[in-house]
Image 1 (cartoon, rainbow, N blue to C red):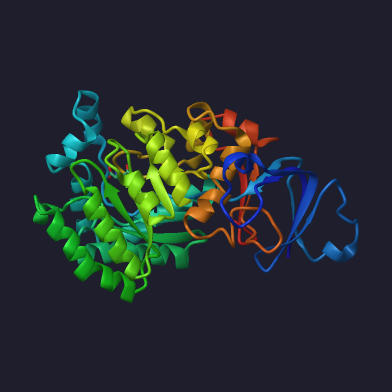
Image 2 (cartoon, rainbow, N blue to C red):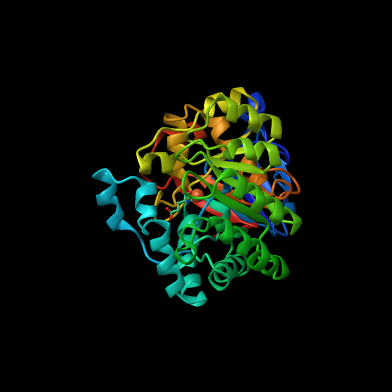
Length: 410
Ligand code: NIG
Ligand code: FE
């Protein structure tokens, strides 16, 4: 058993479902609190200094939070962390005017990372990704989603997904796996996106399903990548295999991906940089969570998603890192928190919900994590901060003091 005592403020959203509208800003804030953990699960919560001074806790490992803030462990619901190589050389050409999609059209960008990922063995990819997972744990992330999408053929997609599985089994991090075989049209299918979608549906998805390597299917629905019809076909096919839908939508151009997310009642639509009123209405009608990625807006030198409008329209908002070697080579979810505060103008309470409960719900983990409540996993962050406003305000340093995952100090 574990006892975390002397918590200055214990702040958390509440529940197992994503929170929208005014509910997104509702956090409990317990003062002078303590948490008891039994078997990796939260078993009791005390507030207002009511922790009894008894020998009942003498057998507990005790962590003294010394008056600090404690929140749920962070959930990063959108990453591409299994990849080979980096793409530092691309930044130079982007700053001189080449667009992200121009670079991809010329066989660079995602396709460059595909070449580097195909070259690595599963073990090599595992070792590299494990390093990223360790960094993320140290930054307060206790659950994450990891997408494939740098293999773009049967063997190399499965290789990435197997790495997700191993990371989930062999590191403290809970890793939720998403199949993103439709991340780009591979060179072998150049000019044949329809045929590539058929290949995924007929050859790759059955194997992903058979080996139970993913829970979600995502698609890069974007100008010059996969159009709405191709995305719809793929996601409906994946749904038949039991994979729930996610869509990279409106990252660069609004070509209808957000409306498709609403139509298919996707679990989440992700990016939404270019999403307008019509797209927001469609998310709201379809009960789709908006997974927003502000560090990508920063790194692409783009606009920021209209988070306030989404919240006002009743769309649950999650915030994630989008860690990948192209549009966002940062795995620091705390940076996304800062950008959510300054650029989205979200309130600290809304942001905490966005990086915990709403993010957990966006990857099907709302029942087990995303809030500090009796019965949920004991995934906690003790911050070097007195309140979450301070976490949103300070930037550029790791503000985490201690991370507890499944009741164990990481
Ligand atoms: O979310 N846009 C598609 N996928 C990633 C970028 C991948 C890459 O550039 O390697 C994203 O931005
Ligand atoms: Fe992404």
